[in-house]
Image 1 (cartoon, helix red, strand yellow):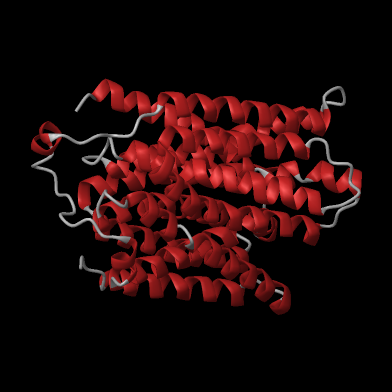
Image 2 (cartoon, rainbow, N blue to C red):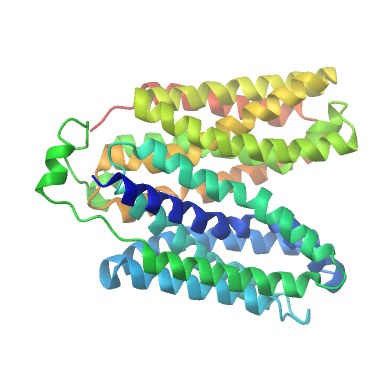
Length: 398
């Protein structure tokens, strides 16, 4: 394998996903819309739910487009949709929130979903011997976007001479340029006899599963349940990280800082998980993620109950590491268990766990509001992580 070429593609893919992940900085980008147009938190929450839904649908659509028109043209479509979504959002008048739902939630969500799935699939084809590592690096770039690009966007929005409209416009243009450049540079891997010989010592999935065959596999459903449970734990804690910090005795400043630290740990967790995957295999990596999540839940619950600053900081860091494992395991698991031929479509379907995880996280928020404390929701989260561990121990290749 040409190491220079594949690491260059890894760099290109990571930069593209760093920009694509801007859509996850919604907690920052929504603020001026609420201030200028008076849109409520529930109304703006619907937009993010739409974005996540069409992100998942975009992954499936992108895999189908890739088969018909190729990687280059598919990524160009994603560049147009993603850039257009942000650009037209910058011209909103506030007369109807439905236009926000359309341009940001549907159009941008679809574009990012198409880009995300195809970039990860294409780059990972160049790293069949290090699929955990490549997945981890790519997803670190995607996860770091809300911290890096989101922070830059926040400063741009707060600048009275620039404002939120120019911020959205700038993001749209940058997103289009970066994804369009990625479309021109990134190439799909074409396997020849030399590649097969070089990879003969690597443990690869011998059978390439079709989507139907994958859906019939009990291993698919078990892994889907595990990642869904773990992701729901991470989503829940991330959404209330500041509140947990304050309840544990952290100052306002430190509580805000911990939200950023959690994001950094999330990024590192993706690379660490990838390295563990390549070294010890899928099952041991999943056990590692399960145990981290169980420990994180217990530590945070103890922190809140005893107002412990140290335990809170430790717990949030562990949550970041464990949550970072979810996307890396998802990307590497599908390739490891179900082969490379239909990886694009299979991976996009597996990513539908994000929708289910979001629903569970919403239910957890409801439990928090109803119970008036953290005990009940965290007991549920810890229980889900324990169940995930039990399921993981039973997973075997079909």
